[in-house]
Length: 255
Picture (spheres, rainbow, N blue to C red):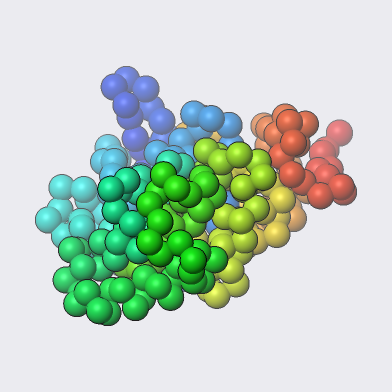
């Protein structure tokens, strides 16, 4: 579904992505982990056409991603994105936030958009909040609205850019549970996260990025419990030491 070939990305004179290669199959859940500044969020933004890239190619559903292409908005409807910040319209109700895209982007009749929006809000546990405004919701509730809003456009895949990083710790679980449900239903997902327990539980594959390159990738068990690269081992020690959420058996590092 998603294919990335030798992608390079620079900001001014700083090379953020240095030749990234990987693919994502339909229905696969891939978690991207790595230190801040390693290129994880930039990679997601390149996949969704929010950032251009200097070298290489990105293909989504067989279509080359080029943010100057007039069809880029059609591509973005296929690949949804959930950000760290919720970016909800503060002057619109929860229901109106979820209906906005289908009505104004896809041209759906209001009755159709409203029916789907209510179903999606019920799915994420917010059936009683249809008429609330974002300011009346907790951060976890706002992020669940943001996920429902993304799903309302019926994407083929969803990119999650650290969706729990702006939440208080007690609210993280409710957002991760919605993501677990989506994974169980077969949604293709790329998730930038520091939630190692979630990655181990849900990911089909984990990719560790460091300094703009994928240094190590494999199953969640392989990368999180038996990492082979010293940089992966060091990162996991630091993350787990600060409460990264790994189960008790932890990470086994090489001597």
